[in-house]
Length: 154
Image (cartoon, rainbow, N blue to C red; front, side, top):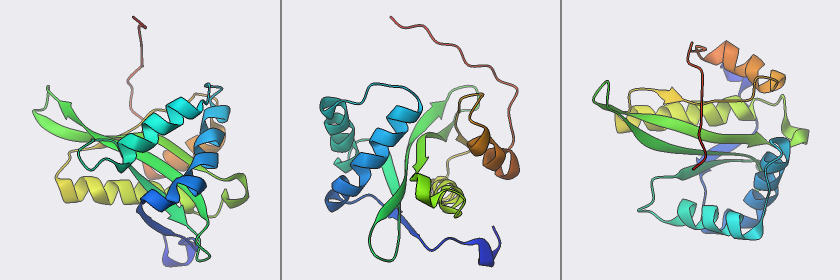
């Protein structure tokens, strides 16, 4: 990212008093992926994010006026085949009015900095095939892997 493209946001770890700014963005993320958004689920995730011992962490993109316009959640994961720890970027969402500002890229780059600081080998994430806007960013800043994702729900 060139210096002139850096958005007018600060990327920092989520704090307890960020809940009211984080919650509508979390709801927007759930709506985008058509996943149920319940107060119970949000409370569980928030409790994880605020628990220093829990592996799931969050960064927020904050405007100078204090308003949160973007969120990302990430966590370390073990990579047995490589005998190293990587970082999984689970969720990334930017408020519609802040899209195109560079906030999403700044959030991803902050997760990459965290991975580097922790000695994690890679930052990896998935997105929907039809998420064209996000994929345009991802195609510019990352390498698309050849892996196909499967799941079974027990």
